[in-house]
Structure formats: C-alpha cells, structure tokens
Image (cartoon, rainbow, N blue to C red; front, side, top):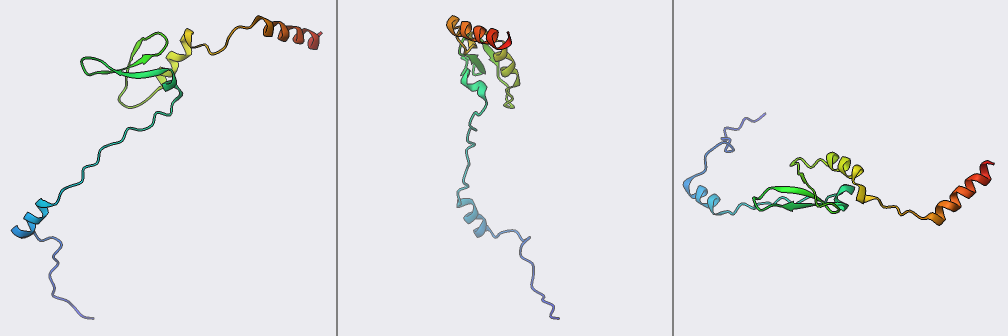
Length: 109
C-alpha cells in the first residue's frame, strides 16, 4: 500500500489570476417559463392586470373580477362557475322535450 503526500487542492482558494478568470465567465441566467393552464376554468375566465399592477381573474360572461391566488389553485373559480347562470351550455328545445316525454310515457305505461 502506497501512501501519497499529495495535497488535496479541492478546498484551496483560487489565486488572484484564477479569480479574475472566474469573474470573466458569464453566468447563464434562466428565466422561468409560465406553465400551461390546464384547468377547465381557464376556458371561461381570463387573467387581467389592473392599472395598479395587481392581477385579477375576470369572468367572460359577467365581467366580474375575482381575486387571483399566487399559488395557482382554481377551486374557488370552479365554485364560482358552478353558479354562473350565463354559463349554461344547453339550449331548451320544445320539440326534443316532447319527443323524450312521449318516449318515457310509452316505455313506462
């Protein structure tokens, strides 16, 4: 077994010349990308920036502005959309209703 007397250079301070070289190296800065909004609430709501710089969430139907959370949760927006009357995606069709009712009467009579 051979014992080496070599010094460990990993914890030494750099010489002034090496320090200058390290200062000249540009550090790559990374910008944070915005994540894709995958929740279904973003089909009915948009993020708006007010004059004072605050961000709010605005309903496309009523133009009501809701508080925007920084943590990205959308539960309160889903609750709002469940009660949004203008958001109804179905249409009332008297002919279709008459057909369904007559079918129900024939099946259950």
